[in-house]
Length: 243
Ligand SMILES: [Zn+2]
Ligand SMILES: [Zn+2]
Image 1: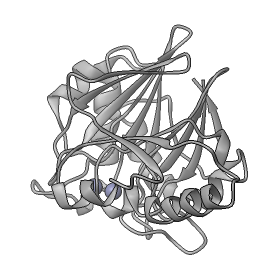
Image 2: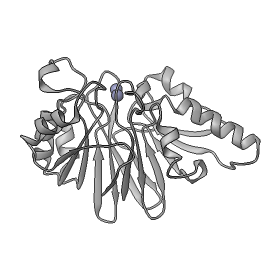
Image 3: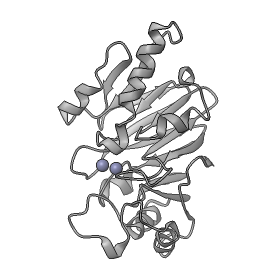
Image 4: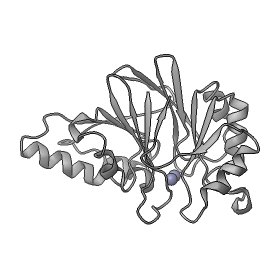
């Protein structure tokens, strides 16, 4: 699989940047995981809208779903013009209900809820999910193809379930919303150091940090994580990573 980072900021984009969005491509499918602001624009530098097979949303915070509100327009209007002849499959947690209902757009999306027991096959990729710890339900996503596995946390505070879910991942993409100096017990995101610890405990092969607070210097985050897990980098916008 090939992972391209389309957005790496949270909870709002830095100048010229974009919020959470990751394009995962295999031989047979293109899947977008999270769709924050700026992601739809960046995605079209790589694939056309009609080449996108499905969207998976880890959770329904706006920095992970706001571009769904314009993706809906794109599909509705392209359908009317005869330029798009299907509905886009969208998978997301069913809570909060009010946000989920905004995705229930019958002339654009084919919406389905995800949960711990959900398994999906999209092309040759197999997806599974695990509930994490965040103010609203967030599901970590595992994507498997050709014997390789990517695990992405979405947004989460430290969660023991992340370790078991991520066991042996070839690439682990984790929410490093905080440097240790700014973190408190009630923080809804991990520190870069916690990401490093999680990667080490899970026995992951490589760690990518993401969900960057716009004021942070990425070097500081990578250095903090590298004290716990050396094979770590920052997820960089429009950069491709082989899984
Ligand atoms: Zn977020
Ligand atoms: Zn969030």
